[in-house]
Each structure stands twice: as C-alpha cells, then as structure tokens.
Image (cartoon, rainbow, N blue to C red; front, side):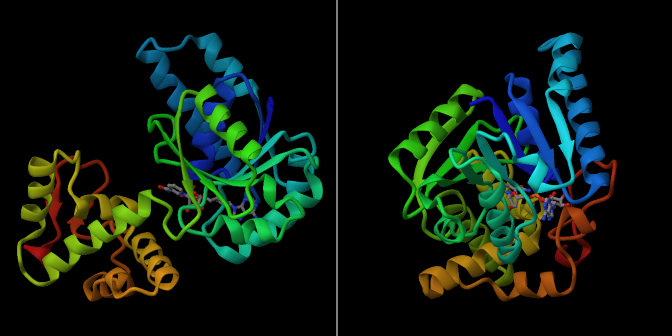
Length: 295
Ligand SMILES: NC(=O)c1ccc[n+]([C@@H]2O[C@H](COP(=O)([O-])OP(=O)(O)OC[C@H]3O[C@@H](n4cnc5c(N)ncnc54)[C@H](O)[C@@H]3O)[C@@H](O)[C@H]2O)c1
C-alpha cells in the first residue's frame, strides 16, 4: 500500500501529504484550486526546513519527500492508482458526498476510502459508494506533522479488514491510532465541544472572566491552553457547527450551543482567523490579549 491520494490541499491536506510523503509513500495531492496546491507545497517545504534546522532530517530527506508528492487538479486523474484515498476537503456534507461518488468511480475497486471529517457521519459518506465496507474515518489532528493521534472511525458497514489495515497504516507513519465507532462527534469532539460550550456559558453567565476560566483549566487540569483560547484557534463557526451536529444527532438539550457563541458567530467574530473572538488576535503578536468586549 504505497500510493496515497489526498483530496484537499488546505490546512489538513498538506499535513497529511507531508507525513505520508516523508514515510516513503507516493502521494497524489488533489485540489480544485491550483493556488491551494502551490501553497501546500510551499508550506510542506517550510515545515521540512524547520526539521532540517533542528537536525531531525537532512536536505536529501527533504528533496525525497517533496519528490514523492505530485499535484493534481482533478479527482479522476489523481486517484487512478490509489491504494488509499484520504479526503480532507472543505467540511460540507454535499461536497463530501459528491467527492466520494467520484472517488468510488475512479479509484481502483481495492482502494480504501478514508475521510478526515471532524463531524460528518462516516456511514452517510459510505452510503453513496459501492464499497461501504472499505470506507472509514481517519481523523487527524492539527497540526498533522506534530499531533500523534489519529481517531480511526468505523462506519456502520466498515469491515474488520479495512479497520485493521487503516490502524496498521496509521502506526506505520508514526501516529497512534485509536479505534472508535461512528456516532456524532466521534470521541474527540463529543467531549471537547461540550467543554468549550460550558466555558462559553460560564463566561455568558458572568461566573468568571475569559482569563480566569482559561487559567482554571490550564493550572487546575494541566491543559496546555484554556478552552476559550482553544475555541478561538479552532474557529467559533467550526465549534458552533459541531455543536449543532451533536444537538441534531443526539436530540439532547445538553448540546445546545450557548447563545453567546451563536451571537459571536453571527457577528463574524470567529476567533484567531478574523482577529477577534474571546481574545484579540494581531498578526505577529505573541502576547495573549482578552478582547475589549470581555475586559
Ligand atoms: N482544521 C482543523 O483543525 C481540522 C482538524 C481535523 C479535521 N479537520 C477536517 O479536515 C477537513 C479539511 O479541513 P481544513 O481545515 O484543511 O480545510 P481548508 O479550508 O484549509 O482546506 C480545504 C481544501 O479543500 C479544497 N477543496 C474544496 N472542494 C474541493 C474538491 N471538490 N476537490 C478537491 N479539493 C477541494 C479547497 O480548495 C481547500 O484547499 C474538513 O473535513 C475538516 O472538518 C480539520
């Protein structure tokens, strides 16, 4: 299993391409945007330079890794020889269903089809293919080259063999796979998002301020960063959309998003990517500053 196709060359796709190429796989990196493909190769190159500086790899290792990656702008040509396809395109159900129909049509019938989705049902994605037993979730964490975990998600029809091969492949590239079943939010987001939501509700109810909430969780629970800072990094729109998936999927009020989160998303205050969330984010500044509104 040496030919890997990665669909989507954004934040996650470039990291996934990087780790497979570095562990001697031939990677076809596919994106509809040529600009995204160029940017991905640039990012991978910069990340490899950082590893050279730390003397973890040599210049030759870098050249070999880059030469293992071939860019494509069409799924049809990019998945022709794939043993494993990993889809990491934009999080949108209709888009993913359409991509999976195409992969199923053009990838060899023996290929395993994985999705890196954070919240979409693996079972649903598998249902539009003719090989639901070969469809599985591979939920990598951001940044992919650094984070060890791969949440391997079994859809309702995923076979034991597909799961075993995916677990083995994840270990082979230096990750630690954990097998979970396909229910809303899987494990990572089912536990993380209610914690973030509870932190936002605590702020909304003035139980404590932004810094106080994050400090309690950092110093009291040994979390590397507080839940409000993490929410700003993930993107408040992404947090809201995952909470809606949990709320719809389980039909339980405990997953209802805090009204403050809904308001912030509607106002376009989405966290680090828009410059404003619970904190104020200015490019190049390392110091963490609580947003004026929450002072
Ligand atoms: N960013 C994270 O922290 C994170 C973590 C875990 C999982 N995920 C999941 O990974 C996936 C990708 O997220 P991201 O943050 O990398 O998104 P992103 O926006 O950075 O990248 C998505 C890429 O998909 C491309 N794309 C869109 N339609 C396409 C198509 N039809 N064919 C090929 N490429 C297409 C876009 O051009 C873009 O380059 C999502 O499913 C997301 O839920 C994200």
